[in-house]
Image (cartoon, rainbow, N blue to C red; front, side):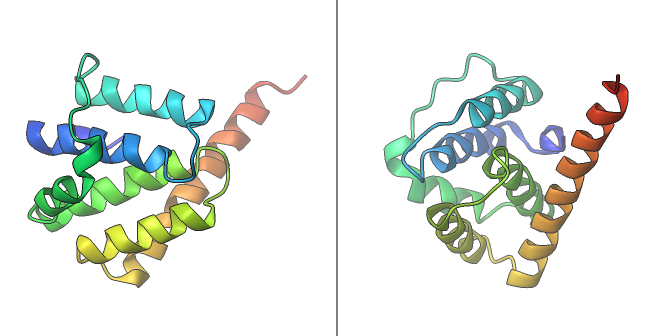
Length: 134
């Protein structure tokens, strides 16, 4: 939704982080895969080949030098992929907490972003139920 605001380097590092975050719980769910594909589309990087999955800490360090706006975009979009299945498991919650700390986003702001993503997901679901009503 907001990925177009990132520069090319941030977009590539975001895709690395998004793909990594999908597997934090040991699986890549279909819903997450669909969202990841939409991230590639939005970034204009459909053919981007992941290169840094085993160096995710360095990806996070690079993203930590981004602007506050870019960091909030990254966190918001990551919540989107992690909440694709309707929940954040304990492994994902731990990962997000560590990431939030590394990006120097305070906990209150991270919770606020998470609540916004949950509310948007609910509104999208409600919209589909309204238009698909028999």
